Amino acid sequence: MAAAAAGTRVFLEVRRRLQSALLILGEPKEGGVPVDISIAPCSLRVKTPEGCTELRLPAEVSLVPSSCRGLQYVPGDGLHLRLQVRAESDAKLISMFNQSSQAHGCCTFYCQSCGEVVIRDRKLVRVLPLPSENWGALVEEWCCHPDPFANKPLHPQENDCFIGDSFFLVNLRSDLWQPRPESAPVETHCPSSENHFKLKPKANTKVICKRCKVMLGETMSSETTKFYMTEIIIQPSERNFSIIPRSQFVQNVVAQCLVELSAARSTFRFTIQGHDGKAYILLWLLNSDSLVIESLGSSKSITKFPLLEDTLKEDSSSAWNAVKVLYQPCIKNRNEKLSSAWESDISIHSLTLPSATCLELLLILSRNNATLPPSLRSMNSFQVAFLKM
Image 1 (cartoon, rainbow, N blue to C red):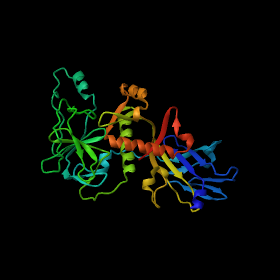
Image 2: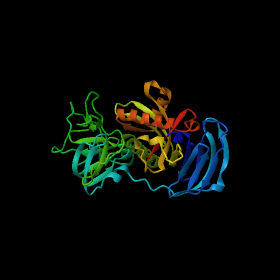
Image 3: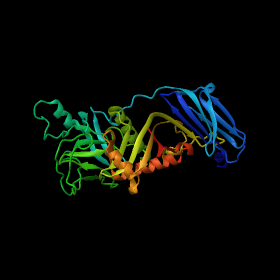
Image 4: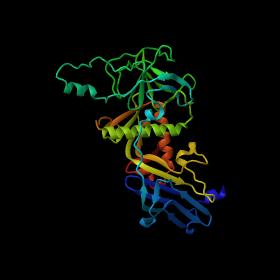
């Protein structure tokens, strides 16, 4: 362990679209220690008297050693330099729903936290996206006759699944497990991708997992239930439930939601709000093409990744696709003025999650921020973090 602690920390952020990379070599504990840096197209090696740290790159990424430039020493961080890379562009983003299910087969819905079966062997014939929240106003502008969709909510039928920004709408039949709310919700207008029903303020519509008591979603009517993407895993029925660490799952779902929404709506600023309507986090998506590689270094060349410490294994990949975000917490009355300004800005999109998940996400962002090199942890008045894909 002493040898591992003596290794040099290496942080590498590769930008696929820009074909460039930022390399940071951690500052040694004792000043003036000689360092030998070797950069090859497929690897990077740092030698000190205490040990050797080697970082191997994935096959689709290669460095250009002759392009090294901008070498500088940053107190508290170490050596910074930039160089060119040859990186294959990341694959086209696939919808999270399509990654875990098939519309023509039978699917099973699981609680992501404990694996409890929520819906078993549901055959999904239609998997359709919900329209944006302003679709009703657009219909009124385009139609020269009365709105044909007025007072006709978009209810999923028995074999339907409607997909919103961060949730699924499904129809629960009487022969399936269905939680009973204390009081029934009241529908007032048609659904959209965010605000699809207005309910009585005191109506208890939470859908709770029978085993671990986690909030999975909300009942929208006597037949329609909304499940949040961060709480549910949907897999083909012939496949067994696979355990995914909670931190990894939440990061992946939120990152994909941000990327898909930014591409579809040309917006890069988001408010993360709970099901109670309170804003918890302000998020600003900087880029979605980052490849993050980090090693604490050791004489045995063991690579570690503190940003995902709950998923570390001996055979873990040394590279993670990630989205880079700026964030501000809004809990305990922090950033009230900024939060109010964002909520009144029509160009900023709201993403609704269970309140407990919002706090989980804030904890993940704070932890990931704390593991970055000090010079990368803040930008202007925002904090910086990576969400792993």
